[in-house]
Length: 460
Image (tube, rainbow, N blue to C red):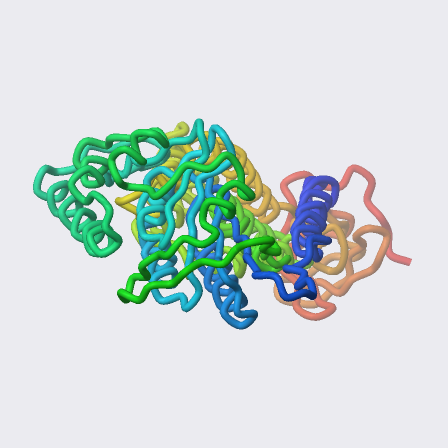
């Protein structure tokens, strides 16, 4: 079978490049874990929440708290600048913080940073809540976001998730001695607070200009832990050690992002689709298989809506049907709409704005539609191609009867300069043209051609 030029000139280089990029993302980072410095000074372990709150961040915070407990640190300081994230991940982080044997301080920093949505809950759950001047927090109203666009919630459903969120917030703010009534307005009214408003409203404990200033203010302060025990912080000349994300966590943090998950899922489907339609190319199958496994791994962590997955598979079906049948673009348009809806519904997270962006969904869907339809048309066209080598190339070809062929009797014909044994169901005169109908081993079955040979060939 002929191989389409597109396969060799375009598909292989593209998937090979994608493989290099995926492999590069796995290379270990030069950033190391915390360096424990020798000395008798108090140790402060510094963790960081930068960007969305997601499942890999949960493992990072958990490992950081465990490391601080193992090293008998005096304090765990979590710096935070986040727009929010997944509610399940936020709850797990808070559970780890409340159970930590080492006191935990959450500090919204640097200037211009925010502890919004899920970050607001994490801030108020800490043993010590602090903010830098020029920061803000709050805006913790539950929302449903599809494809990057907020969606109006049903009134009953909105009340349900609001009441659930407020009860969860009260469960630790009251025991922390903070102001639950004011904190609830961040949910009911989507209210946000500057650092001064949060301090005056008794939702945070202090305002600090820097980490050093924060540790200076906390030195000698007695705090009440969540279990009711009281601890006096001794942070004079404290040694700060930064606990960083491991190379593995950095890589996994990237693939659990909704946009990256969607891209990996589409690359995986396209790679396997290319391998099935063009067997033997190998590279698309390898890259597609790896991408699909990574996508499935990410789907294990994220709240996946099966309706989104089915819509993406339905889109692929539409693209294949578009290549097989004349629909004047209706099936292709249906596939594009189906894939866009699938991308929007893929991540199910009603309490956050965590989902596939519409721009990424559109940027991936259109090329995928073109490539899928194009590859399938190549396959369908190749089925009509005539074999260029072997005995099969003789089918339909015309030859010349060397001697007359009696009906049902074997004779000889010349075709492509070669002599073949042939049988015809009808008598054929010597030198007449015949057409090959089928082949059985080295024997040809022929019939008289409509156009006789212009120059009869005499048997020798």
